Length: 206
Image (tube, rainbow, N blue to C red; front, side, top):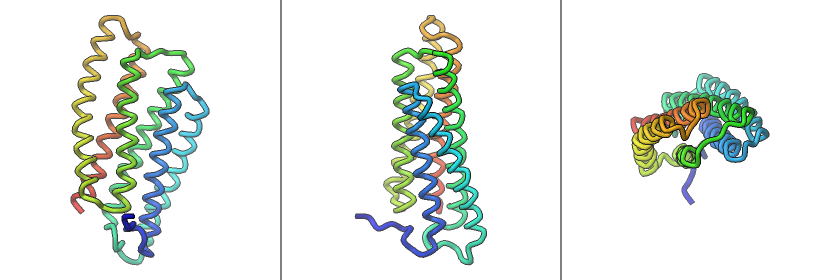
């Protein structure tokens, strides 16, 4: 078993950061379930997790400011930067949850292709957040490279999906209102992958 770098006594701060990464992963999973099953309860749970993330993020910043000494495992600048990127992910998830709720409330339908594309991005986001959890605990350079490579890969995939969606819209396979909801969700998930890359780079530049 890999020894956690959060085992040092400082590392109440490190542990809060890890807690935020775990909660962000949970919020993503709840949003994904809400999409797959039109599950409003999962969407409400995602919002509750989001509120916990906000509180933990404030607690983390206060803990860094109050610390009497620099972390022996993570520089305060890295902690603040990673916390900031995780909050950005939370805000992207807020937008995602809002759009999934609109989809459920208005009975909007996605094509099988559109749903498959969003599943692909959700899965990539969840895997990336799991990697961030491991990265916070280990600072493993292999994980850093993996997160960056996945983000770059999905940047290209996202452009491809958006172009293919535009073709479906022109051909009348997708309705305009459904199209708008799909694109907002896709863009939010693309943003999440970019923020995950920024987290990896924060560790790389440490």
